[in-house]
Image (tube, rainbow, N blue to C red; front, side, top):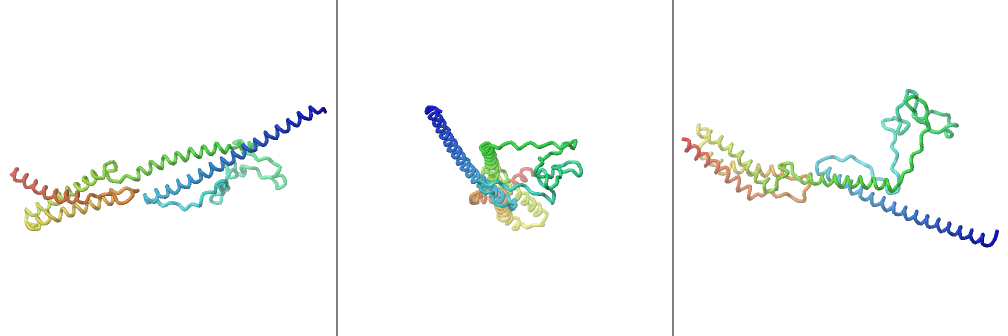
Length: 269
């Protein structure tokens, strides 16, 4: 072999070595990127789990006890038997007396290929599992995390709405509740007026209930209703109940209702 051939061979080997080093560096960089992506996704899923726990506690749902998530870079444990039964491919359905894999003697088991049972009962060698691309799996997991974020945001928006009149503003809701309680007190007022007409209630008692008793009951009723059904499941602080407005509505609505009743009664009479 001539000197030129040796030189060409040396150059070829040097190029192959450089290509191998570049490939190793690129593979190392890819692995570092994958590990960083796994760590980021792990922290994101952990934060999602904590947020879901908060949502569950806000709507009074007991969260089942769960173990800590697997550390990044470590595979999750494979599912085991359930209720004493075989797990995985060994528990696949098949003819009576025949499992997913045929029973072989101990000496021949390591030499035999795993077989799957066809409907006809004939053993067919199983195919090897296709190679999984970590980048593809991470992208799928990231998309699922994005979808979980979207649904979680929708759940938070729903949790920030109260059960009573959820689409109304807090002021409009308070006005409606206090007015409704005042109207209910007006019905009781008419009952007392009718009872007073037949002599069951005297005038002083009727006046005390109309001017103080029934408006106070309406006010406290509206206060309780707003605190029980007008409070969102997730809210920072205490939502406003508009106490001065409620006091004004209840203590004006019932006496005005009584005056309107007297006016109507005299007009019809």
